[in-house]
Every structure is written in C-alpha cells, then in structure tokens.
Image (cartoon, rainbow, N blue to C red; front, side, top):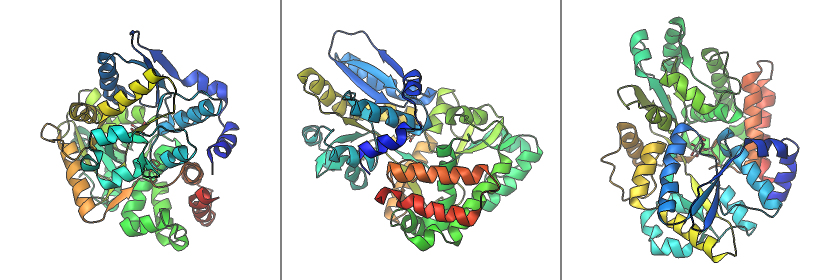
Length: 427
Ligand code: BGC
C-alpha cells in the first residue's frame, strides 16, 4: 500500500481540524537556523528525555521548532505527517520507525545520511538487527535512539506486599495474584482501553502462549494455520479473561495516566513497554524500591524490541540541511545516549555504552537483550510497528479491540479477521 492510498483511507476517520487542534507547536527563540521536528514524545518521561536533545541543539545554535502530536503511541503523529507531506509541507525531521521507514524512503521523501553514519562509524556501533531498519537500498536514512523492550510488567511493590501476593512469573501466577489484589480492593491490572494499549497486552500474551518461533511464523511469515490456530485462540481468550481485572474507567485513558495508577498505588500492575519506566522516574520513584519491573508473565527469555528513530526530509535550504546533520550526529553522541535512555526507560542503541550508572531495570533489559539475541529469542514488536506495516497494524488493532471490548464478538470470526489483518500489508 503506498502513502497516497493510506492517506485516502485515513482521511475519512481523522478530521484535519482535530489534528490541528491536538498538536503542540512551539519554537524556542534563538538566532540560529530553525529545524522543525515532528514527534509524539509528550508524556512526563518522554518530554524529559527529548528536552536534552533540544537543549543540545540550542547550544549548537540551532532553533528546534517543536511539532508534537500526542496520542495513540504515534498513530496521530503519523497521520499528521502524511497530511502535511501530501500537502507539500513536510517537517524537517520526523519520528518514524520500523518498516515504515522503507515506505517513506521508497517514495523518495527522505535524505541520505550515509555521511553521518560513516563519520560516526555506525557499522561498528549498531547491532545489525537495528541497522537493517535504518537503510533504504543500502543507504542510511534514519538515526536510532534506543532499544525499548515491550514485554514488561510494572508492579507497585507496596500493593503487592500489603496484599501478600507474589510477583507473577507465569500467566497462571498472574491470575492468582490478580484475584488476591482484586479481593483486597485494588485494581489488579491498569489498562487504558485504546486499541494500541490492548494490542500491546495482546502481544505479551501471544509471546507467552505461542512461543518465539510460532509468534514469528504467524506474524512475520503469515502462517495461516498459526494465525487461526489453537494458540491464537488461547491468546485471545486470555486477553479477554484479563478484562475482569481492569477498572471501569479504562476507556480512552492514556498510557501515562494508566501508569500513574500504578505509581500512586491505586493499581498493582501494568503490562507495557519500558517507556512506562520514564513515568515512574519522572515521579521520583526508584526502581526496585517503589516499583518492580519484571518480564511480562511467561516471557522471561524473550525480548520484543521497539526502536525509536528520526528521519530527515529532503530540503533545499543549506542551513536546514546543516541542522539536520547536526541533529543526526547528536542523537548517537555517547553522553546523549546515556542521558536520554536513562530518562526514557530504554537501553542505549550503541553497543559501547557503559551501563554502570543505569538502574536495575535497564541492566536487566540489557542482559535480556543479549540473552535473547544469543538464543534467537529477539522478536520485532507487533504492536509498535516493528513487525508489520501500518495497514496491517491498523486492521489488527481493530480486530483485537473489538474482541476485547465486546463479549458477543465471536472467536472463530475474530480468528479469520486476525489472519486477514496480518495479510493486509500485502494488498
Ligand atoms: C514509542 C515510544 C513511546 C511510546 C508511547 C512507542 O511506540 O516507541 O518511544 O514512548 O510509543 O508514546
């Protein structure tokens, strides 16, 4: 599916006025050249992490014009980007990741940054699994920030202690703990009913139930039997079973407000990628003491990865091009890699960063990443645009969300729709 057809399909559901009202465009007043950056890092932890980059750009005399579009883990930002690009007004820089980088690159919108990559020796700094995503026709067009792990569980230590529940290692243990927590009057599982949050939960359950090989064969190799088979059925039913442990206010709640429930001790757990850790840290909570991070139940050996990256749109103005190159260079600066990833919750994307000053969760994530790489248990995240393209993702989110939110939706029909959704990218 090309960008034009995706835009046409989206424009019906996303009114332009709604996008305009939702964006946060701000510009710092410096004398240097201006560079406009479209991204979706607007929660407390995200904003703190990206502020460092804005400050560094300013120090170098570049004026960062912020075009932040909050919401839906980037889906709103990407819609805005499409509309702006098609109306001939793309930003200078945008947050795009995964297979979508190829789609934008193939349309000829993105600048070649091979010179920056060569100057910084990216081929020696970045794991191969990462750099493959950043190139179009063998040329670098995107710069990576980090590696996020998606299959995490975040727990409030005090709630678990008070209730006398054990931190769950498996799905069975999850349900035992959830029962205890519910009986004690806390929300066992914090979830915001947005389709992408439900899909993030679905992904962790699928990894546990299907195992790495079948997960990959289903979602990356499009194996029909697995997409409609008994393990997929069990995954969907487990997802629906979890609903009884969520609260009545979940519809429409953002992921960061949902994390706040765990931070404040109203809820015991959230299953979410490690950008959630950024919220705990922004609220001055300490890993291991106030909150605990553990692999999503049943997924200790697996690492579902999600890499954030920026791309640079083709521009004529030499000053803009210079600012783009400066920004690309700063993102892989070792000091920035340490600062940014400590605030963001992810691990550095450079292989040579000393992890000594990182907290326990980040150290665990790094160990888990290395272990998963060595045992072939690294998987590209399904719910965060690393495994499938946008068309499949939109369709799959919709199928999962319908099933989760409506007990009358039939499971056999849903399984057929899961298969159709995963194949949608090929249409
Ligand atoms: C991005 C993260 C971001 C999260 C929530 C994910 O898809 O990769 O960087 O923090 O969405 O906004």
